[in-house]
Image 1: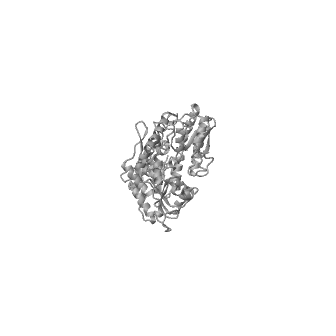
Image 2 (image 1 turned 90 degrees about the vertical axis):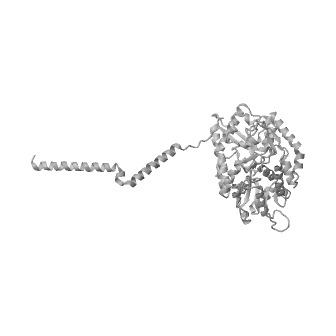
Image 3 (image 1 turned 135 degrees about the vertical axis):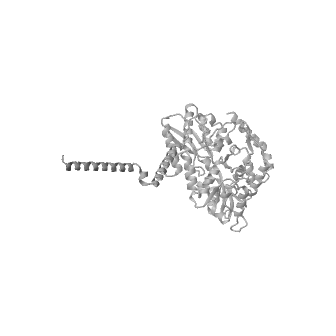
Length: 512
């Protein structure tokens, strides 16, 4: 090899070494982006790593929502037609659709019912059949079916008044003794069970299967336009600060009353502070904490009598509600109308001439087609120091479920399983559709009303005296109708009758 060749080879080797060093340096830089881009990127990289750690931590520590399921066996009933008798909402707009739905139509309630029913039908191999009947006479076909023991109905879904009649007649089973129905579950109203049980027996249950118990809750609707015109203070703020009381209720109502046509009398053509019915006095007294009937340690009701506070509460209510020139009550106009509710009471609230409509929440649904700008308030307290706003549920409007007394064995188990499954599933389908979608967002006019609804449903009470006709509600409402302020003498006169009625109910249930 000559000298030139040797020099050439040496140069090639040197170049190779140089390229190798450069390549090594470049590789080192690419593997260390912090050194390549400076301290800013070091911090950014550290932030990204920290964020990643945070995300990982959230994903590993966040608790998933747990769906509470009923404790029921896996069953297939082979396409059995499951027959439910319920209130005819097609003829009686006081009662909402609750049980049957043939198809989805874009309505939140109907579609939720359809979804609930189809799921339970597929899960248990049944076909749910809705049987509509007059809500105020449902005890008649139930009694006939039970006496015949012909299996006409697998489940009774009637208003509480009718269920009370059915239970006293021996046509319903004590649900506490029925397998697969657990009244301690969240899809049942624990307050209803506490208020309406007798001798630890409960012949019907109130829960999520039906929305009428919510619709039947008493509340105050107020006209926002009229409130503003009168320059009255914000009632929502009064509620939130605990100052929404009877005194404020009647004070605001007094400011609204006005003889518009100057004929020296108050009637349908004038402006009113309060619109309602005679039951309002009982609802106000309940809301104020009056409990003329209480229970002993054996869950037996007894007449506790009235206190001086109860007398004051009645006097305050009667002074305003009993005066036909201060309050427009439905009972004062029944002789002038074929149907006073549909012809006068409901539509007049949409005229902006009524400040307060003290009524059931079913009126919210009724007024969905009107442009009236109204809000929703709880039943007022008696005084500011009262702890809660308490709202009464009407036993005429609220519905529950009952098990026909002719059921037993496998037939009873089947009815109980389907009833429990429907009730549980309703909590996840029907209740949100009614409460969150329809009532809170489609029907209410403001965010505050939705907040008030939470407050209203959190504190409700059911009335056993009203349910069983013990003579208390009749006496109190009768005093109001006659504008009679003699509460003490009237209650004293009715005391023996009340005690005997309570004793009769107890004896009837203790024999079952």
